[in-house]
Image (cartoon, rainbow, N blue to C red):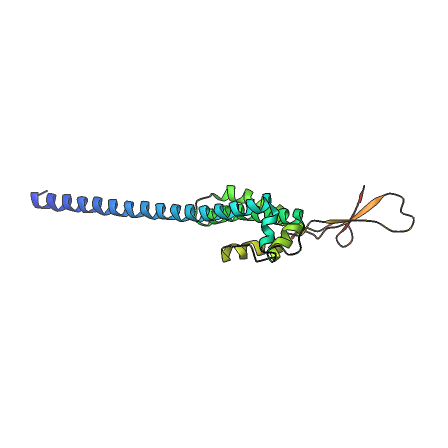
Length: 192
């Protein structure tokens, strides 16, 4: 190999090393920027949580704007803001997962927990009120889908049929998608 060829090869290797360093630095900066974006979002939601905690601890603060939770009792106000706080925590998990800051397995546990929470009538009632929710529009769509795909809690109703001395109750439970119930329609009898 001649000295001229050696110099060209050395310059090429050096140029690739510099280019690799620049690309690596750009990728690191992009990752840092994404992490900072998630951290900023999390901080804003934490500030919302602090305001909601104040309403949870002192429901009279909610009376400052009665349109937020109109005609509600102290316990209803507390329940409303408790559900809102759970929603805020899930929004942080959703946003972090969306930006690849939270792995799929851990997010799946959050989603499973939220699927249980969205069954509650109090949560569904809170979700209908848009006054006190500041949410990413994509998160709203996600939660709407989660609510629509999750049946509400079953309602237990005593059987009032004549001659029923068994003390049984009838539970009206909508079937889960992809599952069928063994009895007629979606009615299940259980003993009290």
